[in-house]
Length: 304
Image (cartoon, rainbow, N blue to C red; front, side, top):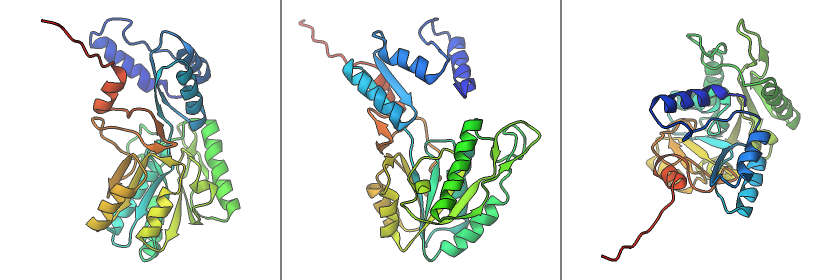
């Protein structure tokens, strides 16, 4: 109910394609009202949901009672690992894209930068300099890097996590303050914490905004352990020039999608989308997996 524009555009495209009226229906309204009606309706065979773990769990329970197919995508706390042998400029750029692309409002966004000892000082310096060049403003204006957060409530949540991080003992290196622009909106300067630990709330809970933190680790083994120390498992990334570490990370990162020298926040639409643990439940979205979810397999025999 906060971002109806893209759904409306999809409905227009489907209508113009010639699909008969009624095959696709767009119903707008508060999730609690519309969602409950769809989940409980006897005529609905399957539910695909994107949202919080709490709501997703309740939907799964209701669908189980009615033996409905269910597909849940419930967010993440995605790690971006930076190893000593990474290309520094590339690591900084992909970290900015991972953390702040779409103002951090993507379930695949990374808010945990896990950086090994030797590259840590140079990475922090370069990251701070790069963040100083991020242009925050009207998302439709030329030259803008990131736009506003979606609502007043989301802005307040983002700012509350900035306060939480400071209260927990992390150091706010840059950002975290509200910005005023000519175009109305809820603008927040991207925030970056250092001196954070894996146990802090800012590294455990999904923020869904332009707030990220850096966790310093000794080596690859510790980086992998910290990356997997999360109740979520959607996306994970690693910046490295080591084929050995890249291959090991792809196999052992507890995530449904793994990126090597790429931002965590970016996927192709022809491949399966989904994760592990608290991030996903049921069949994957997109590609052939989506076809399997939205259709029913039937085996037929005929005596000739």
